[in-house]
Image (cartoon, rainbow over all chains, first blue to last red; front, side, top):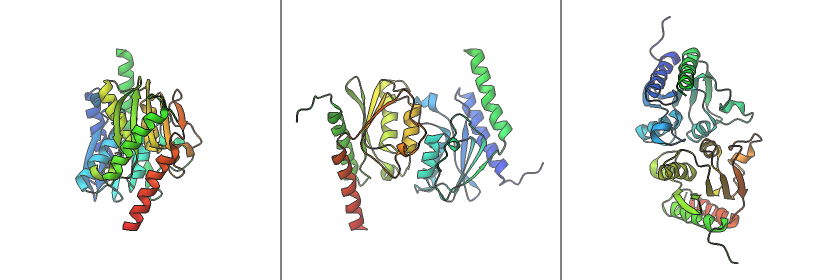
Length: 151
Length: 151
């Protein structure tokens, strides 16, 4: 299969690399990148254990880093790629950021924001899901299987 | 009126002091404190403008600071006092933190999490609202009246 270098699959693979880095650090393996004009302006992975901070989800760190990089609070022209469907906290943050587009890999049927019937994201935000979904799911499932073995 | 030093009103006044500090810094005036065993373990106010970061709500910063102070991610034994009803992002974060109790002053009929019909906070979290509501509302209303005059 041939991917454009700027395809959703390409950027989701970059998010997956972040998830892999999280896994290696003993974190729940979720990764995210923020893309603006086909350029990655922020990369982040879950750091809740390392930072001892429940707010340190990949998306939250990526939003903060992207705003920092771009010098503006709002991310209207950006796309967030994240390996797992954002939770309510992250969806709320993406709303505040007026993010242009959100793309995720694996659905999160327990904690994903799309469980809510009311629209949570900003009305101008477009959504795409299921990009590299199998890989995005696998890295999480394997992590929890491994953790249960250890526990 | 006589308040116990450990009353909800007492701690909400501390949150209001934080809101006042936000106002003086040109931030939307929302303040929060986290209380554990009748002791304030974190104080924070909105810093979205200063930090150029939409995630820097008072509650988010207070959760991070409290976890840092206590050395644990979870805040089951803590109460968050906040001058304004938490938004969805902050409610999601409070869920992740397993916060014991949330007390707020002014309702936020536009962005408050309680607009949602589904429970957003952790099932063990208790909620109380309307503490010092008039003062909590006033500091916000005055701020936006002032801002509109300037604009």
